[in-house]
Image 1 (cartoon, rainbow, N blue to C red):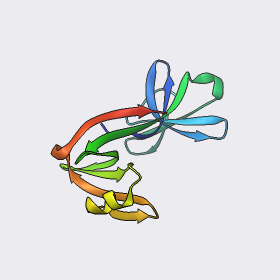
Image 2: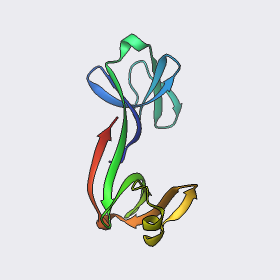
Image 3: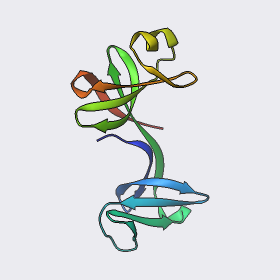
Image 4: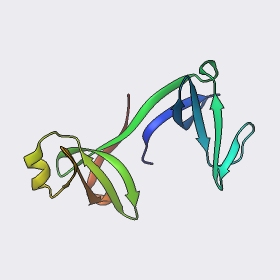
Length: 121
């Protein structure tokens, strides 16, 4: 699984989340009590600050060709990666595109990506 975003623990379970001022919106893919369907297969519930136990930001990190990356997306057997090493010459040598100033991204075959793990901030 690839996660890159907020996660809230509510009633002992983790949910994808989005801060909303003092509140937080949590999401699930199946119907549940207190959740409203916002589109097919997507349900939301708004929690007050005292209703949830923990909120963290989770990023999926990895190594590709010996360099550090964040995993942004997955499509078939490919992963969308963002270089986190901070060295433009290395990013260019790896054939990455400059997505924004100093931000380098590219697609890599999933079987070439190693040491995938979640980092909690």
